[in-house]
Image (tube, rainbow, N blue to C red; front, side, top):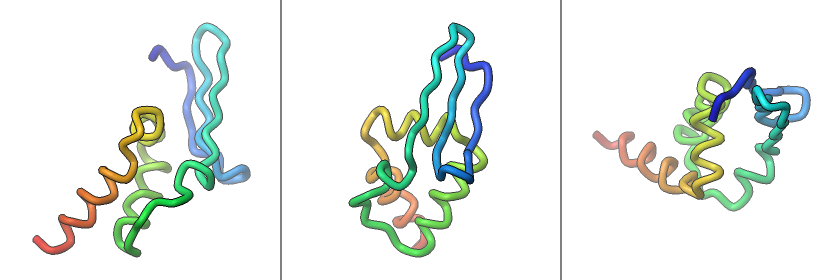
Length: 79
């Protein structure tokens, strides 16, 4: 995706992506994360991902791999 600008919008709790061709995509983080089974540690890591790497967060959401990422993050706690 050729993005022009992406950010974590804390006022709307969303990820906003603006593309070169004029498209705007907003992912509501509350709805995207609804139903995920997280631990406090994985939730913190997931929030950091949304803030630091919004395109990676978006990719996980669009591909339907958010729970798999959270589960992998939780498995690292015990190593």
